[in-house]
Structures are given as structure tokens and as C-alpha cells.
Image 1 (cartoon, rainbow, N blue to C red):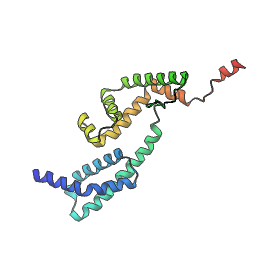
Image 2: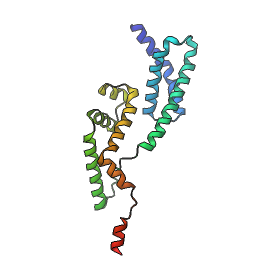
Image 3: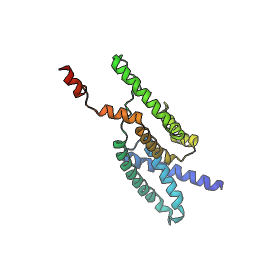
Image 4: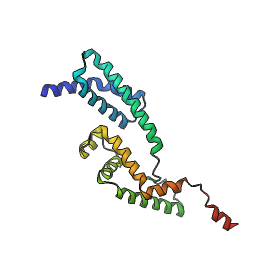
Length: 191
């Protein structure tokens, strides 16, 4: 058993740079590259008995990594349209915002806190870990939450979608999409 573990470790050490080089070509974030690597190693573990020749392993790893990168890139493309900013200023700009801006920021923060409280415990824990500065590595998040590394990204997407569906955040997002400059009724009254 210990020999199998050492052999697996040697295999990962030898071919991990190959996986990373493919991920870099697809310009994945480090978190997405971690997800790709996790999936590829899991697939290798599942398909190892079917590989006929050790010489075929690098090609199999390349092909599997490329396919996973393409799959993840497609998901990320969809995520980019689904994940809109939550409209919360995390770091003040230091210029001393006007009273209206400060009030708006406070309202946004209150709405976000209320929406966050409505999430399930698992989502609150995951998002809290992902928002830490510095963010812990995915391996630590996986260990802390007891979920596979490859599940962290999909869980994050689902949690953010749930957050966006809360009435508080949905209301903020709808208000931000309205044209600025006041409503037409106000314009008519002022004339």
C-alpha cells in the first residue's frame, strides 16, 4: 500500500508541470487550474487500469487536461454572464464619499449581510473562506469543508447564484440597472 502511495506521488510530481503548462495556455485562474488538475488526476485514477502502455500516459494526460480546460472555459464564460458584481465596495477609495454615497454603501452592505444570512450554512462557510484575505488554498478549503477540491468552484457558483436570488440582492441589482438621473415622475414635478 505504501509503495502505491509513493508511486502515485512520483507520478503526480513528474506530470503536474505538464498539466499546469496546459492550464497556462488556456489562461485559467489558479483556482480554475487547481480544479482542472483535480479532475484530471481523478480521471486518471479511474482510467489507470485501462491504460495499455505507460508511454501513452503523457498523451492521455495532455488530451484529458485540454478537454477539461475547454470544458471549464465554457463554464467560466457562462459564469461571467451569470456572476455580476454584488455592488458592494469592499475597500473604500479614501476620497471621502459624499453623504449620499455613504448612505448607499451602508444600504448595500446591510442588504448583502441580510442576504448572506439567508444562505445555507454550507454556502456561508464556503463564501466566508473564499473571501478571506489571503484566501486559503483550495486544499485547505477542501479539508475544512470536507468536499473535493474539484467541487469548490461549482459550489461557489451555486452559492453566488443563491445569493443573487435573495430579494435583498435582487433588489439592489435591479436598482443599479435603472437609468441614473431620477425617475420621470420626479422630472415632471420639478419642471
